[in-house]
Amino acid sequence: MSAADAVAALATPTRERGSDRPLRVVEEPSRRRRPKLIYGVVALAGALTIGTAQMALSILTTQSSYELSTLTQEARQLIWQKQILHDDVAGLSSPQYLAANASALGMVIEESPSYLRLSDGALLGAGQAALGASTVDAIGRATVPNALITDTPLVTAPDATIEGAPVETAVVGADGGVTNTPPPITDGLPTPSTH
Image (cartoon, rainbow, N blue to C red; front, side, top):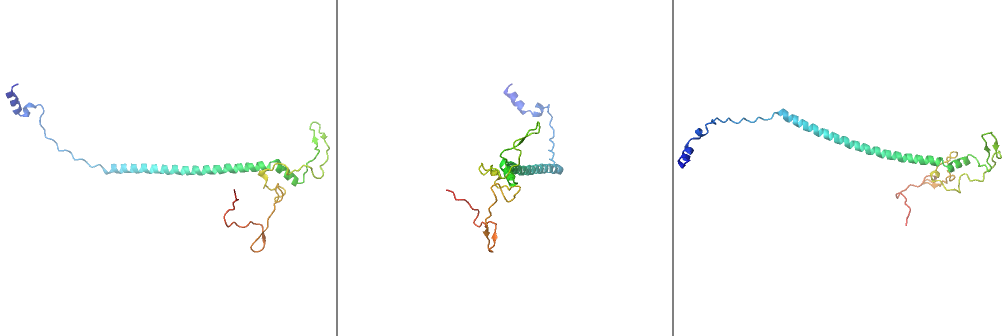
């Protein structure tokens, strides 16, 4: 191709060169429609519903954890009360407490006990009633003390304990009368002096 042919090709209109693509009018771009209001309302309502549900579930979870904490504390206190009652029953069924109550009822320990043989119904031993007082100390003043029953009243004498009758201290009241109540604490709780 010579230079003259190239200049001629450039001078020819493009319609002849690209006649396979016809020209057409460009359409006016369509206006963008506004979104409908109902879609916005549904989206907003959905977001509020989700937020409300999440908040309600959070409140219920928090409330449940408080209830669980309260029930755990109540169960712990019931376990402590059960242990206290178990210790009370252990103290009341102890040999020292039973012996103290038997002694308060006037029962004595026989020095030579009698036995009943079940095979033939024979009585082995002296077979006599115990007389007077026994040489065995039923309350157990020489034995190891039982701390569970120290302040427990005896069945026959509600004012007495295994340690004996309580000693009441008389306090002279402001009116000059004798009262059995301790003086009021004005300076707080008393504390022992330690070294």
